[in-house]
Structures are given as C-alpha cells and as structure tokens.
Image (tube, rainbow, N blue to C red):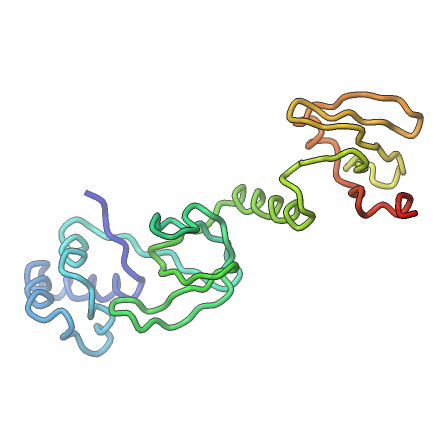
Length: 206
C-alpha cells in the first residue's frame, strides 16, 4: 500500500507522539477524538482516521512545500486543468478541516497541496515555450509563409531566412540570395529562432 502524504508539521507531531507512546495508543487517541489535539498537535485535528492509520502503520511522506512563483502540474483528475502546468500566484490560509493552505494558480482555480506537484525543469521549459508561441497566436513551431528566422548561434549575421511554406514534414526557406532549401522540423528547432512573424514585419506594412 502507498504511503500517505502529510505536512511537515504533522509528520513532526506524529513522530514525537510515537516516540513517547506507541502507534496503537496514538491511533486510539485520534480515533476517540479526531479534533481533540491541542497545542502544537493541533495540526493533527481533522486528519481522517484512514490517513492517520496509514501514517502510523504503513508510513508517510512529507508533502513538498510550495511558494509563489513555483511551476506545478495539476495532479487531481477531477479538475478541468488536470495535467496542465501552471504557476502559483498566491498562497492563502485554508478554512477547510485538515488543510493549512491552498494555492491560487495563474489562469484561475484554487488547489490544495495534494492536488499539485512540482513541475520538472523540462516541463517548465516546454510550458514557457508553449506560452510564448500562444502569445503570438501560434502552436509551438507553427510557421507560416512570410515569417522570418535567424540562426540562433549567429544572431548578428543579418542572414535572415524567409519561410516560403511549412508543414509537419519540413519548412521551405529562402535566404538573401534567393536560394531555396528545406529544413526538417527537428533540425529547424536546433538551429533557428524566430526573427519576426509576418504580421510584425515592417517591410510588408505598406
């Protein structure tokens, strides 16, 4: 069976009580009055019986700590945003029993610590890239005729490439000498960055 997740404060209290008593006694105390803990042990109030039993007899893991600015993945499948990567914008105290805080994420919605997890470095990179393209009304690496690219390793060369056509198999480019060549999408991603989208080109404004 899986270990349950508890807060750092709850873990400290469970460990302290077990060290001074026993798992059985701690469980009996909680079973008789789940909201009867006082002092620093108040963090155990509201913990459901099943969670306490698993924490005592199977084991527990400490919930990761989150702060404003962290990138997270929504892991609770009943949310419409399940699987999406979002950024924490606010941390609020929770009035829900057994919950200390909840988090507001960009794009809306409130989530408890057990409903999110930290995004990996690669997931954050992909989400930032997706948002950048979406800001310009495009899917990731959706190129259109008239867009311009430049070599990412030589940005000051002024060797701009013009997109003549693009589909999932490759992109037809034209350079300043009107030489045409096709770049596969994976090679394109490695070698180029967007210099200017067609809608932003001043040479086409008249």
